[in-house]
Length: 107
Image (cartoon, rainbow, N blue to C red):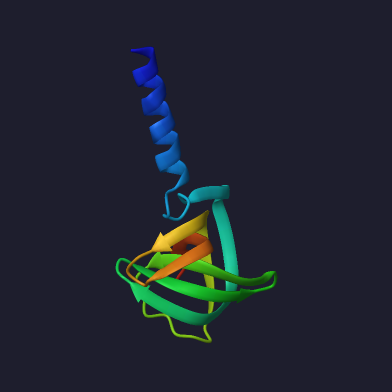
């Protein structure tokens, strides 16, 4: 029985190390990030619009509930949670870092 358990553990270790899938997304920073920037690019993949923003600290990708915001518009995204290694199959893209949040309206 002990040798069978060892074989199983070794087989599972090998299967996991040979996986060709992307690493699982991980949350970074807090869950209350705010981004302010200008929309440089928009990719729609229901239920999200992925926005590449030019911010004071460089370009950042953000995901918001699907929206028709146009490029060139200055936006504020609140209540953000940053994810690393996020695969977005509906747009065929893997993001090294993307902040999921809420697109603020008005003002």
